[in-house]
Amino acid sequence: MIYQGKQKIWSDYQKDIPDDHYFYVRSCIRQNLFPASEKTFLDITRNKLGKDFFETEHHTTCGGIAYHCDTIPQETSMTIIARQFALMHKYGYENYVCSCITSFGLYTETLETWREFPQLEAKIRENLWETCRLEFAKPKYLAHASDIIYKYRNLIAAQAKYKLINRHTGKPLKVVEHIGCHYGKMFPSKSVGGAEYPYVLAGMIEAWGGEVVDYPERRHCCGYGFRQYHVRSNRGYSLANTHKKFESMEPYKPDMIITNCPGCPYFLDRWQYVIAEMEGKTYGENGHGIPVFTYEEVAGLVMGYNPWDLGLQMHQIGPEPLLDKIGIPYDPDAKYKGLDNKDLGKPQLPSCGAL
Image (cartoon, rainbow, N blue to C red; front, side, top):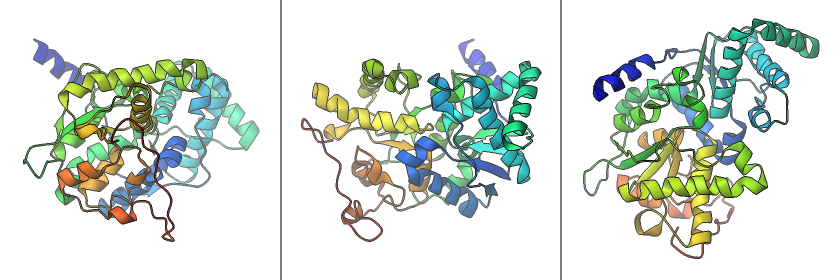
């Protein structure tokens, strides 16, 4: 009965993902924290998979962080989003793909709200015309960028130079997949697999040779939580969330973590440093920490991209032990060199361990 119940839930939460011709919008957070991820995504989809991804420099933030922190009203947020949809319509696209999980959740919330309250949609149309002299059409399909990589995960596997396999033992790497809260928890039917059994990252891991780690706090928040981290008095709660996840996954000895949210890899990566400084506790093999990656970075690694071109030197937790396990070559002397061969400097390491 349990198996049949899971199969029913899984069948209820499938998702139509368009085959081609996408209007792509970037993420404010991802561009600042992991800027090479979006570059890698566009290179893979355009040049390796041959897909049409259009973007314009005129798109803006969705206003998601401000909206969720109650610093802008709903109508303002919706008008910003309506302008994005107007740009999509202007350039002749109807498949809208966003890089940010928060944006995906907010776009979904907006479209669902307009469906339930058409009078509000009409008001937003008035606002957009009054402020920008623009009209918009709603997207036919809304997808997160991880949906696209999931859809073409097997094509990527067919072009892969490496697999998520330990070359020393021949066994699959143990991979923790972390789904951004705004992907499946807000509107489960809009994600691949819903909130309880999301498969968007697990599908990538399995297609590329890895083994998905199941652990008690698998669906727990990474700790970001805008009203936690962005309010100084609540930051202890943010850190406690992250600490709880790491304590939960530690017994399963994961080799790596993969995420589909731009904020989650930052917190799961950087908070390991903070936990090490506060408690003298490090995770991962030999105290080096558990390396955290975006799904674009992992796709790039298996396809043979240079790790430093993927921006892995931007991570607090060094990726070298994992690269060695997979057998991916890298130049240690080039890790912190800029385009002009200028030394960019190394990140500070915690005083307690080998992170």
